[in-house]
Amino acid sequence: MLHQVTASLAPVPLVGAAARPTGLVAGTLIRTTEGEFPVEYLLAGDLIETVNNGAVELRGTSLVEARDVDVVSFTDDRSSRAPDGARRRLVVPVNQQILVHDWRAQILHGQDAMLTPASSLVDEVQVTRQRRARLRLIRLHFDTPQVIWADGVEVASARTRAPAIRGPRTLH
Image 1 (tube, rainbow, N blue to C red):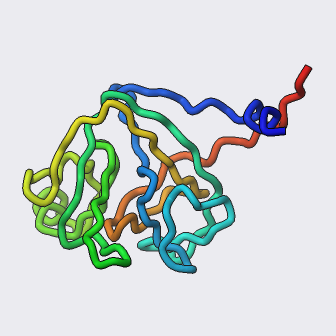
Image 2 (cartoon, rainbow, N blue to C red):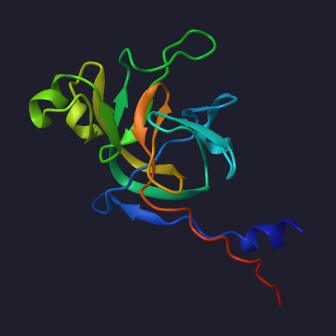
């Protein structure tokens, strides 16, 4: 039976840094209407709290495995605390869009807030950059792109709808 289930699963796409991967790593806490949950436990139909649109139904998730990719690690005041009181560290690929509400938005765009790649926030103190050989990323898909809370940081969702579910394969 397990063989039949695993045979019907689509392979996880493997991409390099040139593909500019985005997404969230397992363990990242996402704010839902029922509290915070690790991103890997979210399913289509869950209600995710968004920055501008309140609760929005998650349409699906997708996986991608990135290799030789740079990531940004946040340990600043925007990060949430784990149940034991420890500060959580959001880790995202350098191209992941982050919503900022500070002087950068005002100076660069004359706006109160803007989306910017995580790489633009690196200060090598609270926000650092590192290289990872392999990183499995989980993408959240909605009907339209959303900004959600991931470990207390406002991040953009995937820009595309969830991939269509394929029917089960027949085994011969």
